[in-house]
Length: 178
Image 1 (tube, helix red, strand yellow):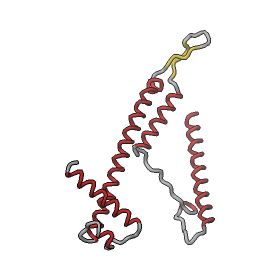
Image 2 (image 1 turned 90 degrees about the vertical axis):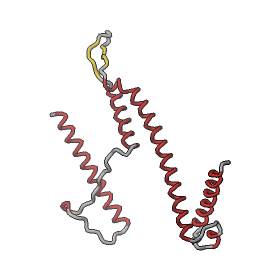
Image 3 (image 1 turned 45 degrees about the vertical axis):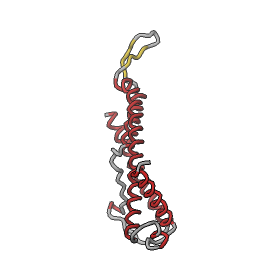
């Protein structure tokens, strides 16, 4: 084993012991932590920070690889349905005579779902903004509330959002008809 790998293995083992001790609530200046070879409690604290950062970077790298794989799968699926969703195909009557050319609406729906999945996977969608307001749209005045009162307020907010969504759908339907 190369000298660098031996040092890496020693560092990983020391950090694993440090993490275990800290999870048990052992303070940095405890002899068990100092016995791991740290010059002072600050060095142990700094090493724990490095260990957590290293772990975070490994997780981020794994997430990036997963995201790339999922994007490639979505690319393949999108390629498989794209032509059906964008190129009109002939529509035949009972006598096998072409009567129209239409795009496949099911394929269009599939494309939209794939695009939506890609947007979520890559964080492209804007976050939904939710706001709870008081009477007349003014600020909500809150003091100490019980859990039941809080549940009631949240259900009222959900009901208002559902009514607004219904109104928007109705408006979209009216616009389609006109």
